Length: 253
Image 1 (cartoon, rainbow, N blue to C red):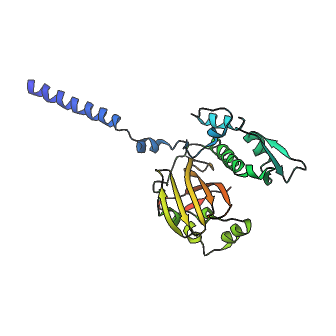
Image 2 (cartoon, rainbow, N blue to C red):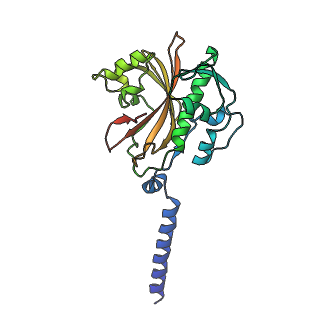
């Protein structure tokens, strides 16, 4: 009888131990089976571009960034306005962003370009939803990434050049346009790619469902420059995979 109770106690202890251990090892992968939350990374730099620091812990915090003053105001020219305008928040910029906008002072162009890109990123992230499915497990910032991402990620220095790349059906991937010479990894979420046309720093900005199809998407930034030239740009690009083993596609803008 004593042996019977002892065996029962040992069995109960083993079951409880397994349950406790299972709870302790509840991994990120297990959480993701329930849902893929909206996440942003250090590549989302808007909080650092404001007049006052804002602690961002939720999507509502990101929405509030749109109305916060930038660290500086910019005098800009818009094709829809006869006279210059002064912009100091993302809300003001996004309200007129359907038309091309440039800074009055040329030396402010790079700083304004950064802010414009991050305003659009903030708008996209704040409207995102948790995804129910994801096919992005193979996404890595490595030397193979240019062979996987669509050609829209390729560097182009003019509208005409960009249109020519878009219309050329023989070009499928980023590496079809820009022949990569060297890759410098900078952690899990960023890498520098040097190629025949210039240099691109690709960085993860956010994850989430950005187009309401239930599938997890990525926002990445591309900071671009040309060696020996004055061209520089920053773009925010949305990409996704729509099936397991599928190709990366660019999200509609």
